[in-house]
Length: 311
Ligand code: SF4
Image 1 (cartoon, rainbow, N blue to C red):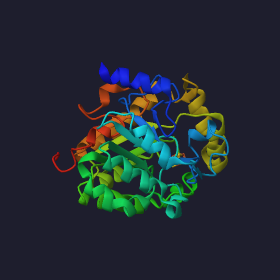
Image 2: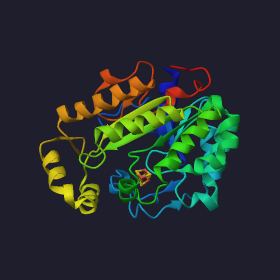
Image 3: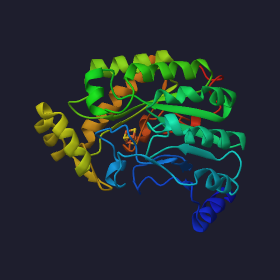
């Protein structure tokens, strides 16, 4: 109850840098209560399926938040110690400018040194630059790395600004070897683009062998701008993609695939994941029954379980 009151108070009085997580009012979101920090507005990875680009102007041109350091310290002072903070939900904390600016690195240090728990969600191998801090606080941190396909041709079109998938797998391995719990997000599955069974099976196997303790998956939810990008980039399957979404349903401002097809995809990834020996969950799909017990969708429940947990 007291944490609910704290949450409401903070919402009411406002915070600049750290904010309660708001999944754009998605009725399907199953995330536990947490806070988010976005050191950057926008993201340079340029993923065709990106959802944030439909909410944020000039999205693919990342720019750092102004005076972040001071605001972060102030905001952290209002939160109970141990609160989970995620970096980030609608940009990547390791978007290309971070290489030189090191704003996310400073934020990570500040958050962990002050006694908070941290979930990092990224596609970038730049996270390995900060392994010194992450390994030191391995019991307070978890890292989710998104890998949607191991087909480098598809990945280079789908996520043109992100590191090669093999490099991302290397990051999973390095983090895991350092005792930092990792999750791989196979997120999203786009029909006819990265949904082939053999490729999904290979990705899941390689991710778990690299040390991922959990796989979280989802299907692509269409919005006008991202769908247009996908159809232009994959013209040979564009009519099939359109047909698949025409047969789907509208939920919370997004066009979903039809329920049966989504369930089929999620069951496929679940079966492969459990067989490989990791935990499974979904993101905004409405299939809570598929989740491994005790494992939140976002990976925050892995915090503190890195060295203790073995399947
Ligand atoms: S990494 Fe995430 S935030 Fe950045 S473009 Fe890709 S989907 Fe969008």
